[in-house]
Length: 269
Image (cartoon, rainbow, N blue to C red; front, side, top):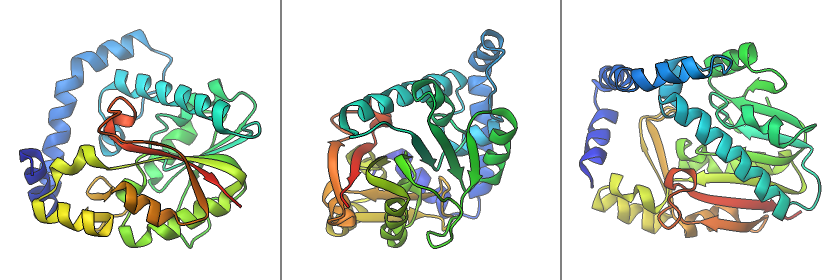
């Protein structure tokens, strides 16, 4: 287990976790202050989420937020051009966070109905107030509660299963399945081999034996909860209703989604 993994484990299981996260937030604000001020000066028309939301959902580096979101949107349209059997007219970004990727989708899918859903009400409120042309919905952290409806040609779920408990993931995938059009696509990412350094020897064995492992505080959707998958575990979780159209091992393709494992799934029925 790496030093960073040990520190994360201690923090997640300590009564000091809130204080430590606050210190990390302050440090990240100061560390990125100069480059972020330059970004704001050079991009005055680009609405930027509050630092607290950026820190909760990812990097607190403004240029990275813009660039990585745009690159991911471009990657998604390329996947649809190759693997979709019909035009992509409706898209759901499930777990959209601060809209890092979602806000760029209208540029690549002109005319498509685009919806972003997230359990964090602060994210959704900011997006509704600042990013137009997209439907923003607060989703539920219970797979059996209907808050998102409709049928979609494409669902994006980047780093969402990574923060949901293992025992609920089959139910979440069933929910996504019900939201898809026939032959619809899901583009999702998980914590795979690149993240094994965060685990102890015993945790690695658990992951290998079970195929999926959840660690951290019991707060679904937050960065404190971390779920890891093996490829075989993902296959078992998906069952026979899905086809894995494409799979990226995050260790081999570290430039895709920050080293997370990535799957493109197709609904079979």
